[in-house]
Length: 215
Image (cartoon, rainbow, N blue to C red; front, side, top):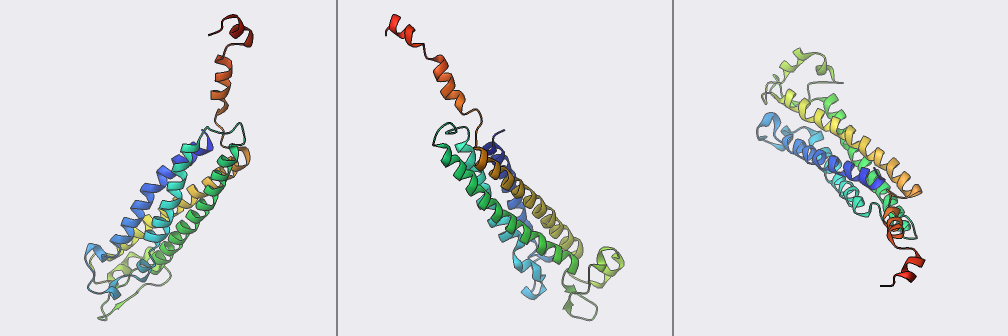
């Protein structure tokens, strides 16, 4: 597979991941699956838009660039036109770096949110963050401190865990594209591109045949 073809595979994978991350972030604005009575009842990390901006919008642009690289695949490797191919692959490295930053941001925000836990209504009659240093992750009896919204802790953990995992996958894919882009920029995005030119030469009749059998 050529570097352009590999980049296309990465782009195809990143797009659905970005869409799912955006949806997860949007769902977090509905604690427990219900509309929040106040913005203060939404966990702070949700407002950092890790899934919408980091793993969402900042991932769409690199994905589209990676998809476009396939259109340049297997062409222009045998002459000066290869410079354009190499520059395209070099540009993909920059966009892949942007993707790493975006997904890394989402990953960090998700990790912090999981460790901190959700904001919820407690027995004392106020909304607060009852957990510290992720203690609720190993001690489920602490979940009883959250009286409402119903199911807020599983909701919080599930969505932020999805963002955490998908952010890690996106970072890995973009890192692979950086390596792939370096390979394409240095070695050229060649995939038998000379076959067409070489085949045309091989298919064309020798000079002496043309002289004996002119058209």
